[in-house]
Length: 517
Image (cartoon, rainbow, N blue to C red; front, side):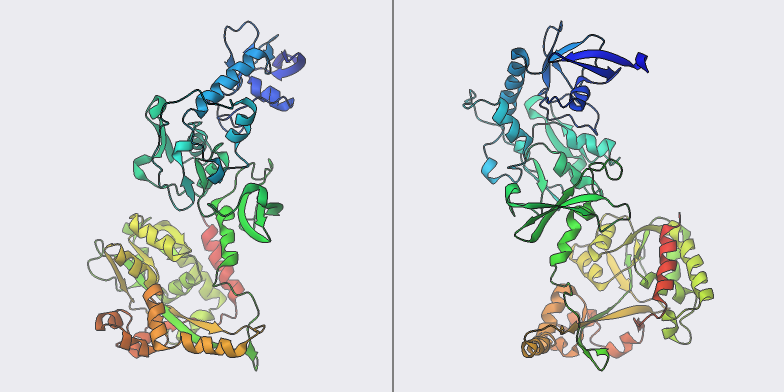
């Protein structure tokens, strides 16, 4: 063990270090601070920023502490006049092109550049030329960019290559023309990609949904555990006057290190969704009271360039030539679909919701045969729409919303009900038991089921209205698309969801299918 250690001195303090360690690793362990921007303990050394320049005895010029390995008898000085002068010179260089927009920057109050500028910056700039300006990039809905602030530390670039294993950002240009950008105008969409928000030492990459919502010093911090996974990912919740504003990682080397998934960072927004049921529902004589609001099918959605004619059966999903090119809903509706292919809906469609153990085992086997063809199981309508737009899938179980959104984007899409028929659903509006004004609630229900209101809701959701009189406010083509010209006949092909007495068993089967390799 002794052969693996060397003796060094830092600011006159004797320390022991392992051979091959960088000076900064040793000083961090000894609680001796050296300023840095590009260095991160979880990433490889880049030595881009040069902020960590220190004096090393017998070295002709300052050396970067992050990239200088220790040697026997080495003497390093982190606070000597020579080291401080080098660090102040680097800080002045970094601030040459940095905009003076701290008052509006979301990173304000927790910015590494802001903190180090206080310690190593000048009070007056000697640079009188015009600052460079970099056009902001649109890299997706989760991360905002202010690239004029970027100091090219490349933490975000190294994170993509080394941690998430899927490089999505890179550098282009040289010198002051160097920029961070995506490859061929792509967005960043990896499930870990938003960790670059925390890695960025300046305000170049920020939380887009949180943008301009609160300042760091206004919020309170609460330690939590992730509600989205079984690993117990550690997170901090930041609240402002009792409202959850954002979620950030809580370091834990045994579990998540310093990273969290995007679903943990952004999933909390569902707490404040208007669709969330916040109170118990009214029951009359043991039954929930509600008003039918919208309804719709779970049809086959397909790419018409691949299927010039509508597929006539769910069994096409099992065709080997579509390996890796289909998608199914991450829902029990996929279990019902497989049961239909096996004929378990005959002669009584309600049997789909009360299958025997033997039938469920057969359904599981059938779904396992489907797994090689599945590109991804979608959970939201937007997710499936993206899969089609990116040409990752050519056929799927979907919603009418997907068809409408894809048509709006001029994507060649079709929708059909196969010969086996399909499942369908009905949304209801309910009055909560704790309603302070039930009379007003009833007036709201009356308003929502009026024909004109139903038409307006249909324009947004593209689902079928519960009130068929909504057709009078539509063109003949609109009414035909929503099947209002022949509602009774269309609904004969739908098996509307029913209560599933053995839901736990159905869920077990579905989870086993999802977990299978």
